[in-house]
View: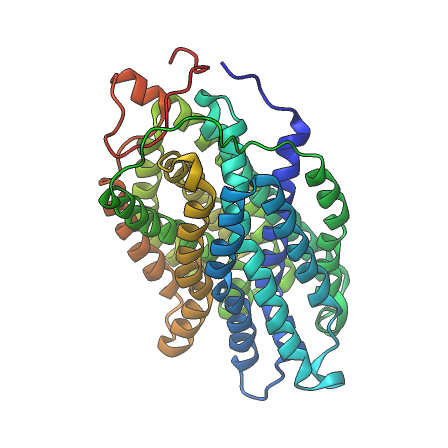
Length: 434
């Protein structure tokens, strides 16, 4: 069995992923304040929609970042690719809260916000490929699910922290202060870890080993199958994830809850993920990837309508936190395992770029548009259950794809004494007994 890697190596990877989610979640639940700062309007809801559209702009440049930085991770190494992506992430994280409001510099305020979101989207599009490939390659073979799931765990820990920051600021600041500078403080707190994370990544070891022999890759139809299934699965996972992150704005804008209660939803979602992400990864190492993806999504499809109906009827803090905790726990049990299964299906020589591109396309089309689409649907229909319909349809499509996905967990592959015909993962001479 391969030795466990130094903790600093793993921490260097997950710090960047955590920063990504802290920034994105903070933007999501301060969307109304950011909208009033950069997109003032006298029409109700227009500033929020403009802010969410700018949030989605960052997803447009993700596929380009996946092509450039993801392929860089396959050609030059995981480490230089992760250093470049983290530097660009830092530029976006630090720059956005320093932009003056529309009242001070006019049209340049929203233009600068859009440019920084495009830069950050480019960086994030390339981040997921090399970082996930690194964790996959540094992990002991029978612990891949757990190690890769640490990315999702770090993201949800960042969500939890972002929720606490939001609750704290909403408790001590009034609406005017939140609009003026409270959201800027929240974003700058995340920016404070940029130098620390960059220093840690400079000390990482390289895991790309071009000299390691690999089996011949699958025929073109094999890659096509991986790409199609991966796109569908990641579309479902990211749509569900970003809808959950929208719950703070949903609670305050749609349900009319006080800000200090609404911000608590983000903390509950993050805390649920901290426990369930790694639990899902660990369970997938023991029982296989498919059961840990299929069973939670089946429960999610059943629970989503009753949960949103209860929340709409009660509109209390207890109902909001119960709904968020339930949906987030079910969802995050399987979401990290989706990444593991796709990464295991790709050979080392295309692992970084392939995963980055699949992830970027899925999140650009569906993750980036989820919050804007739901906000528009609620406004157009007047139905507060619109998020439930959107989430339910995505989960059903994801379940159909899951049943087509072959098993990739080493413990299952060894147990059947045969590898999937489409898998290109070479035998590991250091793999221990299943």
